[in-house]
Image 1 (cartoon, rainbow, N blue to C red):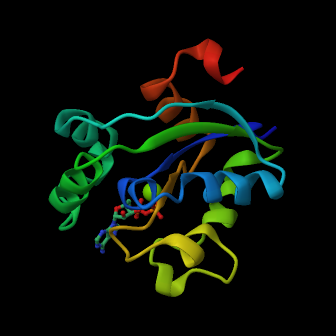
Image 2 (image 1 turned 135 degrees about the vertical axis):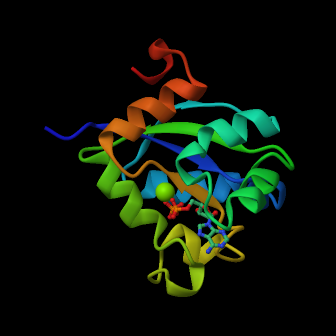
Length: 139
Ligand code: ADP
Ligand code: MG
């Protein structure tokens, strides 16, 4: 059975333009339940480690700089089939290609500064959730 929670981050572009509350409200209206959240600025080292899977890609340096440039809001939400549900709700990586009504269509600036991260598999939701939260926080 698919995991009933997933991991997400409101990225610095959205957090610093005051969109965190709107994005959480948007997700709650779709049935996501907030289980854990924090506000923090990632160190460059944390951003490098979190996005290690993208090391070597042309956008990696830009991504690490952006994610460590200002505060962000890592959080965990619960919903049935959470990983798929949240990926649907956030939309395509590039807001220009994101479907109407998705978080990225509504709130993202560009493919790099795209408002929100969401885990792309149950395995990554567990791994990424553990990166930022104690086990007890997500239960
Ligand atoms: P997603 O966040 O939709 O899962 P990826 O895992 O492919 O997308 O990429 C991780 C993040 O790296 C994206 O959310 C985006 O911030 C950044 N990124 C990806 N591709 C590009 C690109 N071509 N140019 C700039 N930034 C990019
Ligand atoms: Mg991804």
